[in-house]
Length: 460
Image (cartoon, one colour):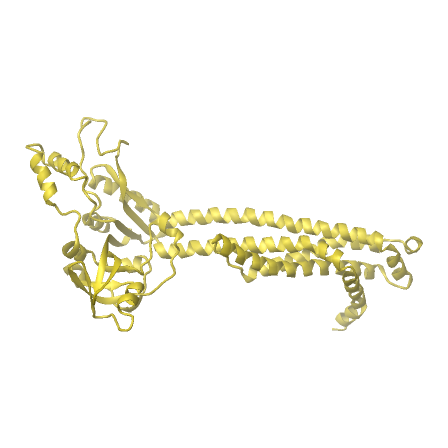
């Protein structure tokens, strides 16, 4: 304790002289600190962009679910040999047409029953409808899903229940509604137990989905969307009471009759071509794997299994959103490291600027240095004085730079619509670096000032 008091009493005067030198040359001190100010601001804003990108990826992973594989219909059917249009181009059966039923409920059941690594599967059917209640009509998306869907995509209920096994297997007219549907139809009353009319069918509300933030940028890349404007019903309810796109219609039967006496598959293919192509019964199949390590292998098995079921025609796509997002996160991390390195160059340039100004200041104030040495100041006192001056300039610039960095991060968020998050870690790092720059780049000028000969200094 006595040692600390001694050091404080001995060097407090040196620090005070450094403060007086800074305040006595405000413009020069401000210009010297500008390099540090902009360097710190750049580092904080770049780290904020990186943190925001990382948070956005984590939010997207929550939206698509953990360990999920998504199977969707493909717009262009390509056979395993590489040709499009579902026609074989090689082998003994070259020239023969193949028929694929598209993505069906049986595909979802087959994936669940065949793969031991799969824990949950949910088929998804999406149809645009108009919901009507007490004369109010509202456009909605009616989705047929299994009860596993809500757990697969981390969809939580604000109240009520999801449909149970009996309701799902029996095709009961029950539904779970999104938050916007609740606000539109049941703003002043409890929706649980009430009915909504979709098309010609009345469905009973048994649950309400919790409102959640939705990352719109994930919609295009990963095929996910907000649940707020949706009404969810059991998938068998959708197929039995609303619409089953795989059901044979009169146009298809007419095509079969026109197909003549050809083989069943050929007649069915002709019917498909005459009716504009067989529609996929499902819009999506969501598959959850037990272990992350099995994602790629399971996706490969699912693809090969569906190829066999679809007559070797690639009329589907198998996507692993989590792997895509992790790759995106890795790319973002590399990009942020590069940005941080570029921003750090500004701090180095600012430090060099401080060193140059302080070296010039030594020659400008050489008579002051000689006078202090003549009246008893030691070399340590001179070092502390000039080191304190450079450090105070750097730290002050760093504090101003922190404020500028926070403001700049906010401007980037508002103007460029890029999510930015300023963390305490980035502020502490920026402040610590600015202080370190002042000490490191101020030491050489301080040592140069302390090494001056008092007699020679007084002659200037």
